[in-house]
Structures are given as C-alpha cells and as structure tokens.
Image 1 (cartoon, rainbow, N blue to C red):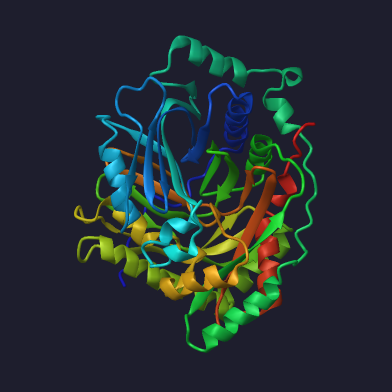
Image 2 (cartoon, rainbow, N blue to C red; image 1 turned 30 degrees about the vertical axis):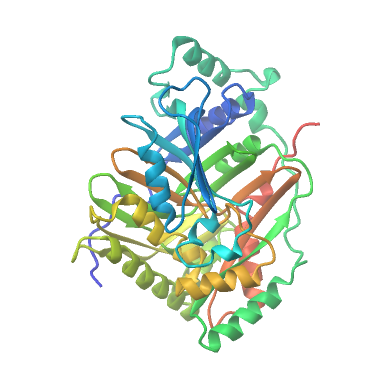
Length: 456
C-alpha cells in the first residue's frame, strides 16, 4: 500500500467570523421561503445556495423520474423504468436533460446502495433513493461577499436585502439569537446495547469483521432547521456542512468526512474516519482523549481495517498503480468528537467515471462495515428504523465530471410531523456495548445542543 504526499482535499481552515456570517446569510435565505426548495453546501470557505429548481431527478426502487420546472423547454416530464446499477439510471436521466451544461445538488439515501449489493428486497416500495435538482439560482457567500452569477438584478438585490435584515425583521441576528432546547440522548428505547452485543457475537462467529450500528433519537417538537444549522455551524468544524429542503425532507448537518470526490480532472479521493473520542471538554481532557485514541488497539485496528477496504475500493475504479494513501491515521477534530483519519486517492479510470466511483464507494466504509455486503445485510436486519438520508450523502456534481459526496452524519432531519437525530458506532470483535453507546452520545452532542424550537 503506497503512502503518497498529502492530498489537497483535507482540512482547510475557515475563518470563524466568515463561517458564522455565511451560515447565517444562507439560513436567512432559506428561512425566507422566497426561492423554493434549496440546497446549501459549504466547502473550502465558500457557501452555495442552490434554489429555484430548473429540473429535478428522483430515483425510486423502479423508476427514475425527470421532472422539469414549469415552462422549461429543455425536457418533458417522464418516468423511466430501470434495474441494475443506479449509476446507469442517473446517467440516462442526465443525458436526457437536454442541457449543454448542468450542475446538480441533492442527496442520495442509504438505500441507494441496495441494488449494488442485492438488497433491494429490504427496501420499502415508497423509498426515494436519490433526489437531485438542477438549480435556476446559485448564490454564493465567501470572503469576497455575496454573488449570484446569472441572476437578474432584482433577485440579487433581494438576496442582499435579506442578508442585511435587522434583528426585528427576522434576519441573521434573530436566527443567531434563537434559543436552543436541551435534548436527552441518553435513553435506549430500542435496545442499542443489545443490538451491539448481537453484532459482536456475529463478528466473533466470522460472519463479518465490522459493522456500523446506529440509533435514532426522536426530538419530539417542531424544529427551525435553518436556525439549527446556523447555531450548529458556529460550534462545529466540519469537512463540509449543508442545509437542504427537497421533496418534503429537511436536513442540516456538519459532515465529518467525504465519501468520494472526483475533481473532473482525473483525481478521485475518499477520506475514511474510524476511531472516536470526545472533544471540547477541556484542553487537558481533549489531550488525554487524543493520546488514548492514538494508543487504543481496538480503535487503531478498526481504522487500519477501514483504510485497507477504502484502498481496495479506490483501486477498483482507478488507473492501475495510481492508488495511494495520502495521509494515514492523523487526528481530526469534528465538533464534539475527534477521529482517526486517513486520505486515499487515485487517478480515476475514464471507463469508470464519477458515478461509478460513487456506486463503489457508497455507502462509506465508515458508515457500513467490512466486508460491505454482509455488514449491510446486518444493518438492515439489526436496525429497527430505516436510515433514509442518514449515512447516505449530500452531493454536488456537474457535466464536466466533477462529483463530490459528503457523508450525511451529525445531522438533524425533519419530514412530516417527525424530527430526529441519529448516530452510530463501529462495532468490531473487541467492542463493548456500553462504550459504543457512549460513543453515539458523543457524536449526537455535535448537533443536539444546538437544536432550535420552531416559533409557534
């Protein structure tokens, strides 16, 4: 396994004031309701607000639905039956858009993996595997201010007006000052500890090597998702952050890692995180936890196992001899936790392409298990609630071949009358149920303290 120089996709420091301002501006735009459904996506010190869908692609178990916005002459609404690999279905839909150039924003749910691993029979008929939009409006917030290339003057003026609203008018400061509500994450109503014990027995019986088991926490009240995003972003250090409202699903999250990034120029990268300790308690406690993480045999073995599996996955879509480990077992701080982290990259084989790379690397090793097929079967069997977007990905892609999918963890979800959080832990043969439950509490602390109740 080759270790190469560091990849450019690692952590890039973002100014705290810029992060607070940009997140609040995007939260204000989202809260206004003036731009329709949207996806906010942060990367490398730039926030994108993608809204006013020009076209929409929805993937279900049996159909790919291409739905243009009213008055769009580029394509007509249609439903296309599909089977096999979802990447092929999405490629067919994208080819049929009739747009010379496009950029997509949206999400793929955990169940997107089911066809690839022969588990589609475990997925309910009404489940959406992916929901993607081509936006009619892209607005950006970065160190240079607010911009919206291609937007008319009235839209740009309104974006700037909303960004400058005073406190009494419901603008950025009122979102920042919204009071969060304490959420108890310590209950275990669906016997998470017992499910971990079952997984440990199955691992020691040789059925698989590692599985990530998760649990849900119902919030129990209506939540202001944009305000929660603004509050949460101030206290997290994510690889990427996102805020979205598509097809009835709302989510705000602070992703610790990338599933896959293809830059359109030949590079393909993944960033496995495995091994966790709490962070943010005190400098002394954080340093002690870091040393414990770097010396814990169980955590080191779990991480090494994940890196080897990711290496094999990248190797399967990369040109021969180009796969390398760029960083190995460094510590990255992510909100309320710190992780062991590595970066694996290669030169993407043009015959594979970015959507095939997504299909191979999805779901992330660090959100599924090793080997993937039996680990995924165990997740479907041992988890009482379906994952939906949790441990899926929020993604952007374009017609040049760029695709970036960030892992949907450390996220709050809202759909219909339900609002929930979810977190998991990597289970191996040495796992102790009580410690794995504690790890889920540590991860939930990246979001739970910042949840803002919706105004009555």
